[in-house]
Image (cartoon, rainbow over all chains, first blue to last red; front, side, top):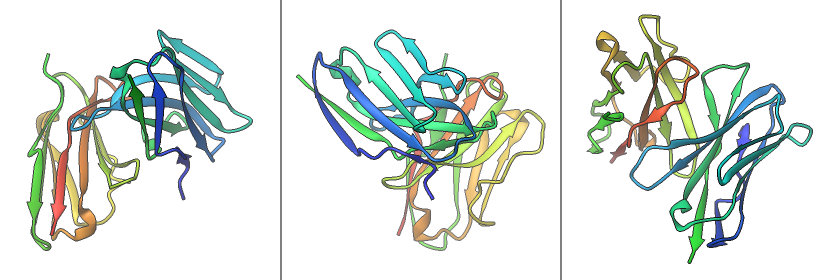
Length: 112
Length: 113
């Protein structure tokens, strides 16, 4: 039973445009959400996070939106750059527990 | 400073053999985590160490899996009597304290034939 789902295995976006990566979750008790980015042959690196008390968090070109009623999380990258090509994972935690529940990832390809 | 390192980067073994995977966390990080990523899946939590506290082993999939952390630093994940379904990338992460950002190593890709 996947509690965190990333339904798009891959996404292709033109350089300079907006990339929108989506994540759905089933457990309304999740209270903290994170996005990680992973390049081939490297471990995931932390990108941005959001607490369930917020609905938006912004860091430079990256913005995460949280819609609690829809149990939906999205990551917006504007403008998209070639270096953004990577696999993006969303993760969630329950009751501020350190155990993260991870989605399967979305491979983002930025086309020149 | 140096990041999290893992060795070996790749391991091919025969079914039934034991394997040991090593993780060197970032110096000074008190928390250490092991995850497993099977093909097409998200990361799966395996075990967590925090300082001198008893580890949280709740994610270990079977008693063939064990891990230790010596001296609060280096950690070894051991898989006994490996099975083909153990084939995955095993990732280690460390954080300064629990709930701080987790920094990941590059992983060990394990293939059990």
